[in-house]
Amino acid sequence: MRNIRFIALAALLGTVALPTLALASGAKDPGVSTHGAAVYGPSQAAGATSTAIGAAGSASSPGVVYGGLTTQKNPIMLQLSRTHQKVVRTAITWEANCSNPNDFFFESAVFTVPMAIQSNGKFAATASRNFEDGPGITATESLTITGTLKKDRLITGTATGSLADKDQSGKVVEQCNSGTLRYTAIQ
Image (cartoon, rainbow, N blue to C red; front, side):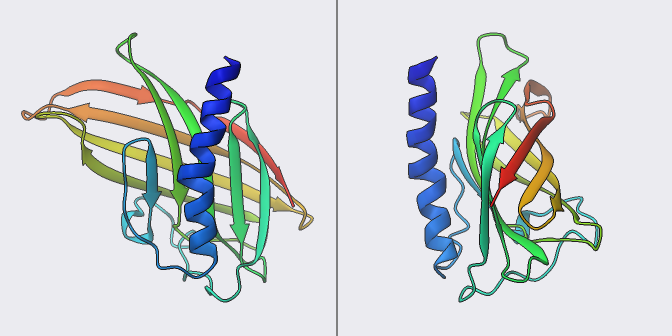
């Protein structure tokens, strides 16, 4: 188990933290998604309320970063705008059990869908992406992030990730779900 966590940390640094730092420094969002390291951009937002999607943060104002762990003991990072009025980026690693007992899903994702922080401190958004997951298999992966900014130094919230594989006829051949992950992140 210890080796898995080390590999997870190395994967997070290589596939989430470095692209996040590049995005925070003003680099253009590549909009590239790969299985095991996803980048969700504003064009992939789905099912978000109108208050959850706002304009992207200024690249020249990287803002404040919060970090913590999920209930799976995996890392989460949230970057707020300088004004603390929106979450501009989230990086998270999550695990999911699948309907096939021999399968396990592990994902590190950069979530660049901006989330407006309401006056009560709450924010939320959902994004999804489709990709080929083998010959004749199309996968839909979704990630929902919610949270509450408390006293400008603490964020608590939840994240839920899922994956559904469908064959060419549209029949679901596998489903994976993380369940509800809770997190606490501090500045």
